Image (cartoon, rainbow, N blue to C red):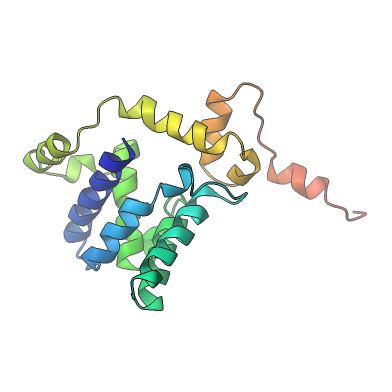
Length: 183
């Protein structure tokens, strides 16, 4: 499921980039798309940081180990680290924006109306969605339920709040009020 999702993210991101006259490096966009959810899976999810950072760190190492320049690794790192952050990726590097657009299209249908029907059908035929909604959300639950504090300030808290009985997010107000300052 994650493989097909990641491939669709690359393809949708590429189409949106073309439509918006962005010019991402296709290889960096592909790597960003393929690694963007790696942090939800073992062995990449064994730290206590946001899953996006797990995937970003792994992709950076992957690129540097293969001789890519640090600047390329940093672009991919940003694309993955920010792919669930609303509003910011679209103002960054073309690879960062296109990865986010691809994720938004595949996960929540953003921009589907701007894609040509034949392209959409071809992508989904090659990379079927299956029971994507259910399986995708379950992958988030499985990847995050043992590290719920990493969901603070992200859309990921929404998934745990919906699916994990008893999960309750700590709000920003509670964090400020409970800070060790006298007032």
